[in-house]
Image (tube, rainbow, N blue to C red; front, top):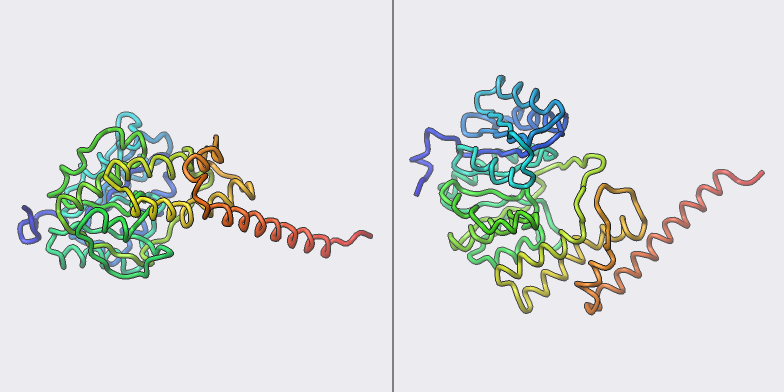
Length: 318
């Protein structure tokens, strides 16, 4: 087992950025990290370029030339979500953290992560999430996958919340079907917590997240409901714990998106094919969905009515 005293030749923290065709977002992300006061010899950045066709290569090489602890790699071809795992394997740190190119670290966040690595001796799995509606910000511990899931719920699927200790890299060797389901990170997390028998979870205002125009591309409700639940079932979630997570996924995660995309019809880059069919396939007999859907519809109708009324007042008929 490698600990901090044995890893003096390697950084404590590797920030691993899988990226594809987002050169300007990547530049902003790198500038955010490298200008942070905590970006020193204890921190490295690993860029894993998924065969981008824009200026990503120029940006990556520029920062790799400017900073010895920024390393740039380019894949020969686009390997899709397998690039997440490859980015982690390319890192040299004691703790390897995935980071989206749209993620911006707030002041003090990188220092806090490094401090947590030092505090735990580099031997305890660590996870850093934004605030969630039913869990106050703070530091929590979990000793089983079920206890971990009770703390983090659907945020277990947020790719930028995932990190792994070098000693646990074997936990990345999971069934390839989880990559196809777009939730390798869920399987990795469950394997890591199960192996170690403990984990530290931090919730707080650690990040700002930029949303690129047209973000999406996948079938949102199929992935975020059906695929996520399938992975959780594979890892033994059942009974009350399963129903709890199913409720949370609907109430806090997908219901706001249902209101925005399916009721209000806001523009999106997500694939919405068979969305209602997918939702009702999983939830049709969970009675809690119907009052929420009705309230969402009424709320949006009222908002549209008020907006129309304001417009008519501003432009009265002559």
